Amino acid sequence: MIEFGERDIGRVKSNILAGRDAGFTGVAKFYCGNLDFNASESDLTTFFTSAGEVGDVSVVRDDTGRSRGFAFVTMVTKEGGEKAMMLDGEELLGRNIQIRQPN
Image (cartoon, rainbow, N blue to C red; front, top):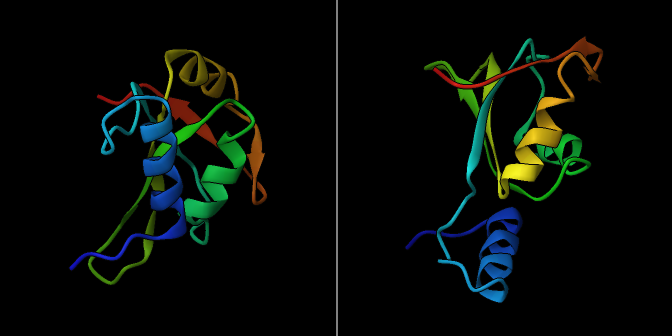
């Protein structure tokens, strides 16, 4: 059995209320780099919520579980993704983050 975290439960509820598939995470995925190594998925979700609904955040980690300093973020809407892209260079946890389209 897989247990969902609060963030996942909120996303599933939001999707169902909006008439979307429960597993939908969004349409605007991007790379977020130059992150503090202590930045968590929760930190990034809070930061990008100002741009719109965050569908998914995945901090990339090495084999030991340590952050590699970058993440992939998915915004639910295209508009949210466009607003999030404008946050390039803004400060998060003392670092100016870099936002790019994924390769």
